[in-house]
Length: 380
Image (tube, rainbow, N blue to C red; front, top):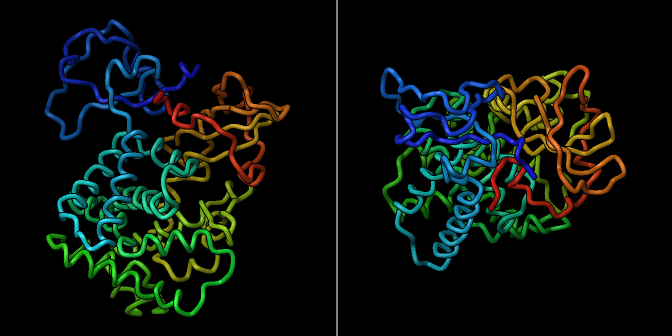
């Protein structure tokens, strides 16, 4: 059903020096190694496992890792930790550190699948889904800034715990149709410091982690909360979290605020796209970091729904290495007649093939039931 879909795999050590069990490709879909050719060892030991792409139908025989299953498990872990913390039974700090490490590993394994799936599927309570999407965007920003592994995991962990003392409040805000009352607004303003205080009681977190949590609603112009810090007074981690948090909210929306969709004309101008997505809030943020993140994600981030020139609706599964251009291919799942395709089809984008006619998120207020994990080649 999804055989043409490529997914990343980590080559196990026992395959090195042996004939390749299948064709292997790079992220662009370029053939690197034909089936039967020997897998040559690297000249020096690399810090990361060797990563290639292969067809989904054979991937599980090579690398059983499934980041989407693990992402759903991470959501359950975060929800449990939040409930324990709210009930007064403080979890061990190592559980949060392990969660941050796991989220980083999932992002390293298949960032496109994790981000795309988190955009399309509600796989836990709203506050948890939002938090994990923000953590994935924080991972993108950490990579864009060249942060070493430990610093990156601190930023990701801060994103995962920035609302740890107020997950119920954030669930309520997601479902709220009107404006919050004065008491709720006070809770909102206090939640960054409440989260930092809770983490301090648990202990064993780096100062960068704690500062990022406490400051993740501070604004460049001093209008943020709770400390009204300005520009250089806000840590790099907190500036990253502010942007990741805001973009996650923009893309998913809530009951009283629709997601921020954009049109095909925005895709042609990166600055116009940034201004459309963030609006007047752009002045509150570190704009250098905003542009870094939007450049990495591009105008067609994973999980973007598009309408093709042939009338089909498709989902963007993977970014090109140059994310500013249109994707190399998409997966069509609804035909031009408006009915789900019995067999979703990979459509190649380019001259003489299919073209992207428009974005399609606003055409579907509610997504149809669909095994979304399979568009990235994962079958569970």
